[in-house]
Length: 72
Length: 269
Image (cartoon, rainbow over all chains, first blue to last red; front, side, top):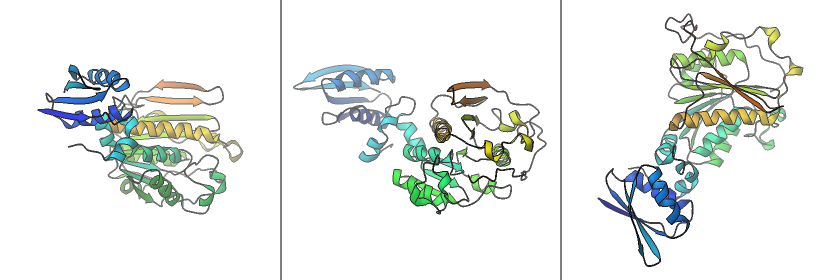
């Protein structure tokens, strides 16, 4: 299943807190599409997701933001 | 599904960010019950950190009223609380820190006759008492009811603490056997304590409770942590379960709770 979350309006560290909550709510194997801004969120979200055993499958730029695709 | 309000997400964000706590660990804290025996020097900081952490239910046991001499270290009580019951003063502060917490004030001293009923239903107990007889009673009751607990003691500039996982790790009685003889117990003039030392020890006990509930790291089981705040030395001594322990061994000689002699300094606490 594909889930999505927009954290472009959040500030650090709530960016990561929101992603962690969302990841806890979805099933293993599901995909989470995280829309985020460049800078700190783009640096920390993919790295932290990998550290926690998830897989970052794609990072795609769209306009001013990025989609980070995380497989739980 | 796990969910938090926006306010809870922000309140607990620093826990959620920790990999070994996270969303699941915070949920465990919110669904847990911690009992704090003694709302004094150790119980005060322990209760405040448990409250801030969002422990779902916090029981506080104490029969005393707040006195001015308490305020040097019992930081949950304020000057305006002098004369109020410690459990009610503690309840006010816990609720002020975190309205999510349910507080259960118990106006009593734990004794052989009431301790089992008081500790029943809690996931973890924090011993914040100030006399040997009660420390042994708490140990024995927690071992018999299989409730993990944190032992703590302070005097002058020194502190000691251990976490007991009943039947799995060394208990207080495995190590200390029985209360020390009366002439070994500090007299009134020797019973001073640096306020911040109480805060250090009570805070370690709170951390142990939070670690036990979330499963983060390893609790201070089979070990005694001691510190001397004068040179600020910390020492961790490894312990082993005593196979002949009077209470936690296979064939215990203590099978029911009895009140010890309450050898406690008359100095106002």
